[in-house]
Image (cartoon, rainbow, N blue to C red; front, side, top):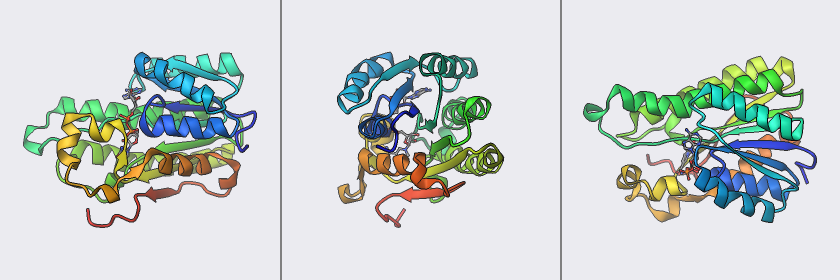
Length: 244
Ligand code: NAD
């Protein structure tokens, strides 16, 4: 029960990797806060997290791209539970589009969610978390070995890796750990239900597609005290797929 008495906040926690992570930490005793832009997804997710064993589970509607909403969600979580031990920066958007069709708006939409969303929560963590706290950023293999058609996403995730290193250095004297996970293709709604993304990934061999639970297990490790000496790490979880 690595998360007994701990409060774990997961952004984009109502679907896919975030939901699997919420269930994993719930099964290990965490009180769970889901911060997600979709009230509908939250309504479906919260009973699953309670069923997975969370002593308490709370949902807060939050667009991570809006700093005032991030501040409000963190305040809500602190008012409700009195502490925050783990933040998982998981909310993210992906889009497949050729460079000549991309607009500045496409770039800003993705950077605002995938990069600034993580930054806003790290800022709140640095303001409010006690020593021993842990932050896990969900980056992507695209941060280091990208494919065509995902330039803004790859750039945003590369910046998340850089942010992880900066935050690890500044977090260390505060007793806070910051690490990132780099998933390969993972079987979630992001991969299969979004037509923009589906067209780019349907050629991938199913054997090279991991489960959300595979990523959740790594996030839970990095979030827990088992990883007390792991700081500023970028850990791949992609089944060893090296042919991108
Ligand atoms: P998903 O689409 O299944 O879930 C994403 C969740 O984030 C949804 O519940 C959605 O409502 C929420 N969300 C979207 N925008 C938000 C916002 N602005 N504010 C708050 N919540 C928001 O996706 P997933 O596949 O589970 O992806 C989770 C993370 O994993 C993302 O950061 C993604 O980039 C990363 N990732 C996914 C894959 C993959 O193959 N699925 C691979 C590498 C990295």
